[in-house]
Image (cartoon, rainbow, N blue to C red; front, side, top):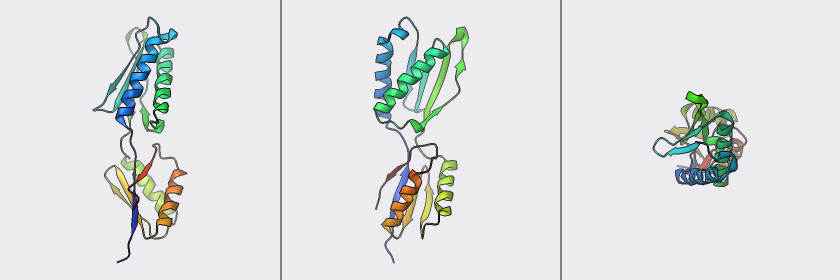
Length: 166
């Protein structure tokens, strides 16, 4: 039997880095002049992998959003994995927004990846969906490297990680 090589495609964020970024953003908000005397907050729910933004008005919500994105980018958290829900306007003009962190490849994106790899015409490449990950196998490692380069050039709405290269 011929030896095959494989790698896994996954996505996700390091929740500890998100927690650190949220804490840094809170500190900056507490010290920034444009947030003095306001009631703006950031909350991170680790179990649900969501960040809640709450601000006095739409302008401050956007500023809060910008501070959080900056802190996440510095911590090398992939911003593509943020799923922003619509802003909600509450009572007294308050604005809220929820940001969900994508922790796995959803079925729709996984099917698009499989379709794209099969449609690209790589020789003897097989892609299998395993829950929230994908496994790509091929007899030659060079072919796998071509698949990785091909997938890096595409956009699936999440940042792909390639691991377990064997």
